[in-house]
Image (cartoon, rainbow, N blue to C red; front, side, top):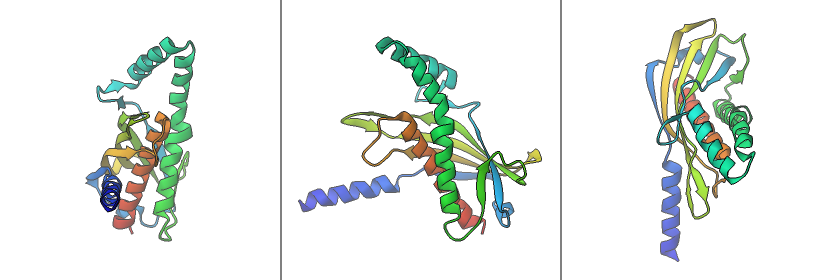
Length: 203
């Protein structure tokens, strides 16, 4: 019993320790100090998906065709849900964790979409998405590789900070059968990790 408990605790520690790697490519966080609001935009223009790195259109076409073979209309319904997941799951999860942790220590910086009045804009670009899977006894969490860029809202060519985030893990405790939920957790992890960097380096 003691050995089993030790194994479980060790496994939990490894699982919790595993996180994405974020690396500053250029710039620094100094511009954030003193800001009360930052605009956020999400970008998917060049995202690739799965280990074979399909484009978004290729991924939708392939998965929809497979689902249509199982049940007519299922593929089309999934395709709509896949695109809708961006607005309904991915982006809200990122913003929720980003704002929660940035403001955890008394800071007051609001990260929100469609805020053209904000001096700076955060671009969250999806570079690679691995949806993961859950088929009962076999499962694997999602992963998200992203490019994080802070620019001046009025002059997008003025890049103040650029960060790469690699393999942000995404899954719920006990696993999830929903691709959108797992990927949403990857976006949440990205927001949380970025918030931690801001707290450490900007204030």
